[in-house]
Length: 144
Image (cartoon, rainbow, N blue to C red):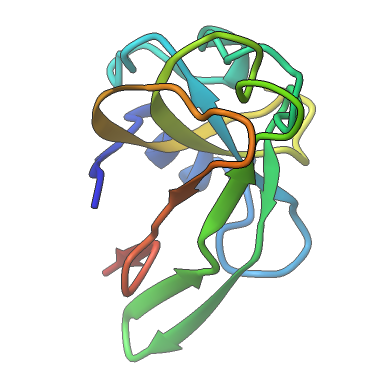
């Protein structure tokens, strides 16, 4: 499984009620990008360089289906893994990715605030007919 890091601005966006990490009102998405996340300063999707939008990859990423539950003072969010499959050519043309990031697509100010990033560990290319999956594991996040 890829290594997760939280963007520091996520905590501020959560505290300022910019994002909804518990309810079902906001649309969350996952993207593939080439640049290493700078968790101290990257705050929105525009801070990242996504792979090209072609051959099975849509610029702006894919929706994340997730659910949150609360037990006592702990909120746990689970998510359905996101899979991209390359069609007619390499996913995103010939661009190689390495990182996945999740963001909230609903807010407009700031637009597209980042949540977290996963480092695949090495660059990858997804050839036609192949797939790559962002595996969230047992939970997307636990807030306590």
